[in-house]
Length: 384
Image (cartoon, rainbow, N blue to C red; front, side):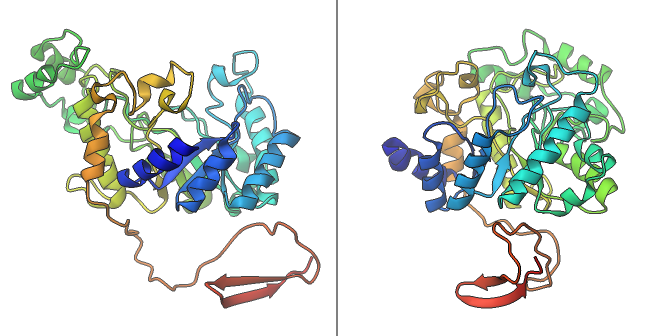
């Protein structure tokens, strides 16, 4: 914990980080306490190696109780259940979505009862599994009236932030010789164009353009939150909070051959612009909508804090694999002026709001008091 308190927490603050996803591994309790004490908002992942099928165990629920008592509210209990790797046995059954939703209903109810706010599980990047629709289909719309939120994994791949609306996807707009050479001259330890000439790249962009494409056609991108919000509004008539619990750019990624692989400098430029979108100061793109609470750039640090995972090391911003042991985005974010996010909704501060939630220890004739800095704002006597 000494290194975390002395270096990593100040580093998080200097980067402008506010939300931190934490797994409930050994040592997580002290880390979460430190995050809360320093004003960060943790999202706690109740980790299970292969969570499907299955429900939270007694030990898992004891962890929820423990973390609620110290101030954690956001809980994630499943991960990309549409993927074979997240299932015992290594494959998703034909009725997998029904099994996942039945388990999710039980787990969400258990977390709500304990005073936590459960996240509707994220599906994999680009998946269109409709968990909220299934929850409603199974007669549990009321569950969505509580303090719940939706987790998403809107990885950008190697696509621009405005994909699928960018000119490359819509019109097959050509790259310039200058842009092509600039990426080559950056000299990462890979060829960002994968041996393709400028003419080959531009021909591919023309051949595979998608005029008129919208987020409804391809959700494997940063703007996936627009797709999920539109679907939520169709189901519920309103938005619910959407929080990224994994996303961002990965150096070397080359998922879409119409675009260059993500170099360290591209990673910096695109991630920095995403942060400006979240702060509402981007000169290129609209501010993040109010329902989109946070990003979760994956991954800030891995082996440098003791992880043994080689897989996640390729994602890490801070790693011995990079010159100076850190990606350029770190320096750029430290230098970026931080701006308090302004909500886009025009509702005046002080307007009437509705608070939904669960009382941890309800009882007949107990009084629930809403208090702000010692001043009582409202009270209500519970019926049962």
